[in-house]
Image (cartoon, rainbow, N blue to C red; front, side):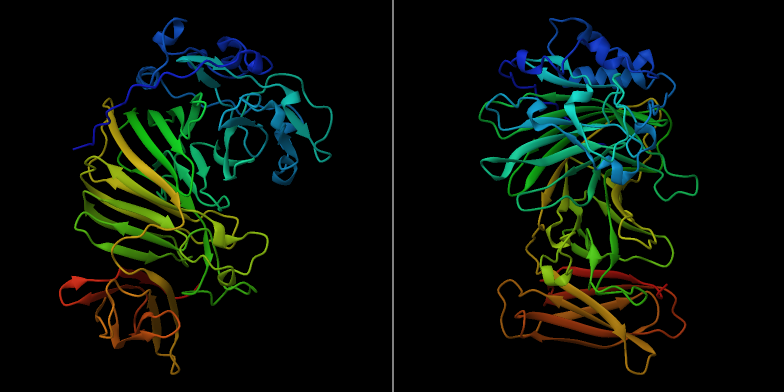
Length: 526
């Protein structure tokens, strides 16, 4: 079964000052009528044609449902000079003017800033609107919303080229300073962070044919509607219309920034074709090297990653920790489950000394924990690890793949919660480090796993269970780590004739698991 989403009625919102939006808000037709965009996208849902019709999630559902019956039309990527040829570095010299932020002159906890279109982000949103008192006020582009630095060639075109996305600002770290807490930009990607964090891994609306020989399909968000937050509120709601060759979708994000930034996601998909290779609640991250494997990386830093492991809490109650790798060849790992309780890419190590990077501060990157809401039935948590020679490439993808395809012409609804956090803790002791190296004779590989102190710990060492799919394990041992006051497990894997081995370590007291189950796929270095 597919978990049915029950949509809550949109709250009544306070009045929006039209004067504050005079410079950015125009008629809907002006906002949607960008060059190269089909008129099918310039029309709102039937209910939105009526100025007295209050906006609701049902309007986005109706728009996505209707759109799924038409052939896919790619969004406009046409841009005038100089925006069509900017480098990424030049793009960084374009800044939105804070005083032009939506709600900048009102005492609201949130502000909205639009993001420029250029060569790195050349797809145009069909429309971006603010919802006031249940009705939409479209926002249009104007050059004076941005400061163009010296890296941007002149002249700057005056025409309406639209936006590539937007950012939401909130006093995340200090009451008198607004921070960018959430951004939507590029296909259906989005970023968020919690208090004290920098930007790291990406959330995504949907993954289609990831790592498939037929090539990946990247759905895009075509339209956004942002509800004006309450005067003293701590919640902002974003609606989005998804579109691609294979599917359309209606999304609703309820966002609560804080020590954890929490997003409740409601999504309804309308497949144009049978969706056989679909990934729900996907996230993309980067893992370059770390403690387990760095033989071929000549770098002063001991580790470089946005995320260092995949954490899973499956329907059986097992807590699984899978350290990430930057493999020699593309790898796909599928963890079968029924009724998953949660999964996510974690950045677990929070010490600067682990990364030694004064610019990137990888120790401050967010983890992303995903909690399904309702019955997600059977499927697999899927992990894709892509070989990468650079820390600037996202080479890690994780998502839930249902075991049953989503048929063309149907509607499929799901809901889930995203927690942008430091880590997600369960009742099991966490793995805090994983290391590996050749033994002295060079015929075996030594693995060392450090656990934090166990719940209700005592001086009696826990029992360990070690398994491998290939080769032979020997010299398994568990001992107290006097530095962490936790437990260290070590074992050797004989490499004779082994080119891949699926390893597992369990920590128990009697029949009771007391630590995360450590999983790892070993393959030879690049």
